[in-house]
Length: 286
Image 1 (tube, rainbow, N blue to C red):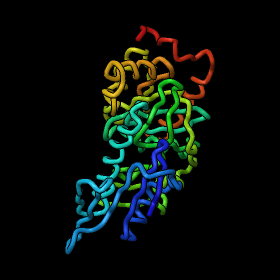
Image 2 (image 1 turned 90 degrees about the vertical axis):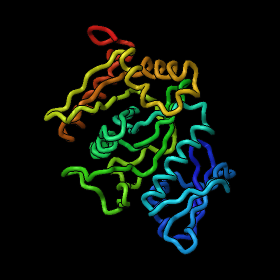
Image 3 (image 1 turned 90 degrees about the horizontal axis):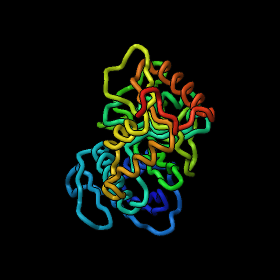
């Protein structure tokens, strides 16, 4: 049995399958804790006379998966939805989160934008890992809570960012345990949000391009990546305006990974200057 605590919520995962237990320990073990109570109780087994895996939550409907890769995909999605229901006070973004130079950096992007690959590379430059999937933001404090599930990659990263031996490989993805991130983990505490980088979907350029976003454009670019917008006032618009107004926001067109990471580091170091405030609009306004 694996017990977790995520955002103050107690989660229990029960299984008698050793391979499944090892898979979940690798992907969610960084959030292991003897949680007070069990708000969510998952049971994983196998169908009678079949190789299919079964997943149930709190004794409810049964979901089936053909293999461990699909099982983990189903669990990830179910858990993300339940966390949003139980912690509707938080604003959830589809985002990677790292502590870069002591400052919280959110990498926002859709599926295939490259946020996880960029997060993996930034970890080699000292970025401390907090999440690669969910960014639960406390809007009042403008802080993001940790969600250190294993970093998930669909494709092998380029040299020199090869994956470690501890990587768990499934039929759907590759998972790097949070404890194996080169830059280490940020810890379980909340991290002040100082910057948001929106990764666009253009083909990668030979050289990376970072562009400062004004508050209005930043809010428009962040909003599509909100997961529980309807749980917040103004259908989530107030939330993205709060984030866009409270930190420095940028658009990134990725280039070669090392060059991209160096430019992000340089940008965040510059934005730490008090004269580079988030309330200052770029030339031409928002």
